[in-house]
Image (cartoon, rainbow, N blue to C red; front, side):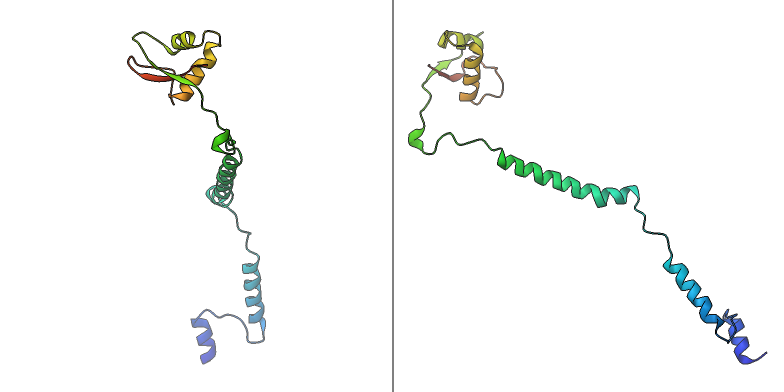
Length: 138
């Protein structure tokens, strides 16, 4: 056994020296090149597709808020007309419905109650005895 064959046997080289070893390397390189394509897991698909879609939806919703903002009531303060109001103190056992009926009996009480809630920035149509309310006088 020659020194070169002992070297090749020791380190696992079993090819011949006539060029067939380059064929083995080419076959190994081509098998590496033919690996399966990249596959995304469920979590990977969510990260790749879901997060950008969520961010896009948030961006669209925020811009739609700007586009659907309430219109201006008037161009200048001189064009505004204040709503004539009177101040009423809520009595014990009195409701907004009763106040609306007393103040504007000719109007629909639902509209008057809605006006009272809006004028006083009430969260609900509940009032407490002794509470001061602004009520439209017309």
